[in-house]
Amino acid sequence: MKIQLWSKTTAGKWAAILTLIFIIFMALKLINLAIIRLPFPTPFIAVFGVVGFIMGLISIMKNKDRTLLTLLSIPIGLLIIFWVAAEIVVPH
Figure 1: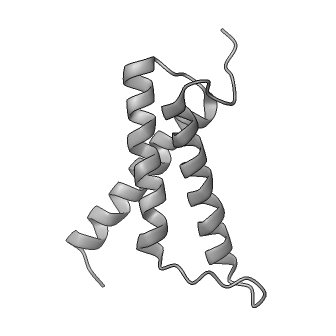
Figure 2 (figure 1 turned 45 degrees about the vertical axis):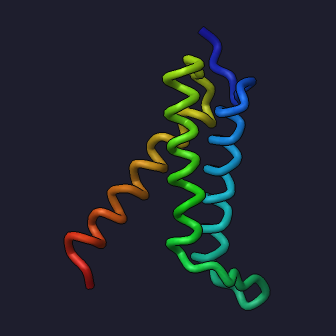
């Protein structure tokens, strides 16, 4: 079975795009260079990852999509959900 990188379904494409936007924005935010300053708060950026997670689940369940970027949206989304749950349970 050959696994593809990019999905052919609309939900799979949205999941991949939103997850990649989340990864890029978080990387830019963590680098925090003086040249590139993102005015977005981290919870706003996390919404991209959570929506990508939901679209990935829809694509996997409904369309049986098994592409690499669609599957990448699942662990990224779970990481965000666990991070939010940990912030709610143990605030600092």
